[in-house]
Image 1 (cartoon, rainbow, N blue to C red):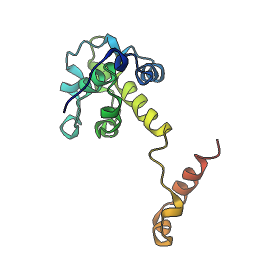
Image 2: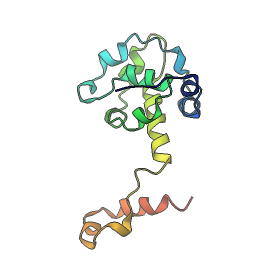
Image 3: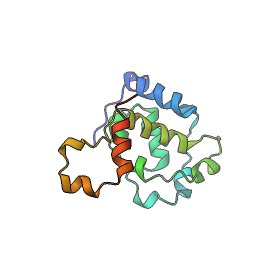
Image 4: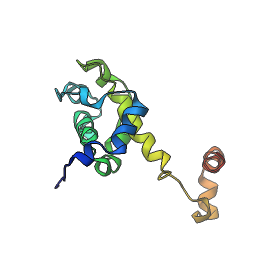
Length: 135
């Protein structure tokens, strides 16, 4: 994978938003890898927790938003407990999830579901889906 790095990436509004939502300073991480070493879900991740931080530091938004790792993280806080800098890595991963969810890329279009498929969906999921458009 070829990555094009520039000052523009590092000062991207995405980086600012991740820091704002997480309340964390991304540049505090010095990539010791203790978060990844202790993560119980790391074997299923395509980007390791310390790499998630590095990608976020560098403004690699598309790579992060397409990663399955942000959804695999169980927010068990092992990474937070192991970080020698006190960075709350789970909050950074949650911030990245929130950015994606706020774009409503998780949205299921109810009009595209067949009646049989709608019958299989729990009613609360349909109600929740419709509520996204009421705020």
